[in-house]
Length: 165
Image 1 (tube, helix red, strand yellow):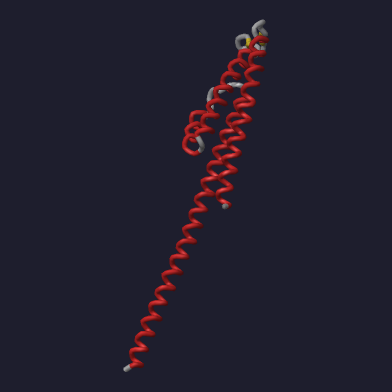
Image 2 (cartoon, helix red, strand yellow):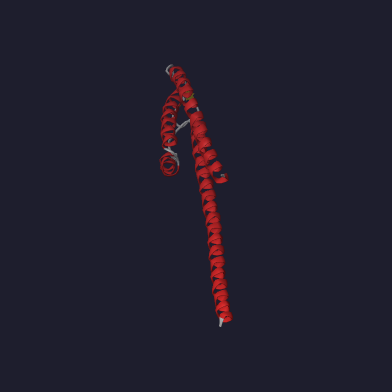
């Protein structure tokens, strides 16, 4: 009789430990899989943010090369930045956009005006004043742009560091 109780207790204890090992193993596996999924999603988010930042910088550089802000994606870019970046980055993008618009307007005024449909241009006396004003405005725009680039780079660095940690 004692042996049957001992055998019964041994079976119950063994079963309990078996269930305990299976539960702990399951929890650890689920935790590891959750961590992998979370890390993968965060890395995808970083890639998306990086792509938006590259598109943003590219759009600003294209505008500086063409010297006009017509037909730009600035409203779409600003909306994306509102969704994915910091308030400081969005505010700096607005300052960059305003400085860029001011510079482009004056720069375009400083360019020779074409005559009709011909390839001839007329240089007017006011063009040099607009050119000087455009040069001054570019000196305002350039530091704003450098600050913006630094903010984007720092934000991405912080995101990369959080993945590593």
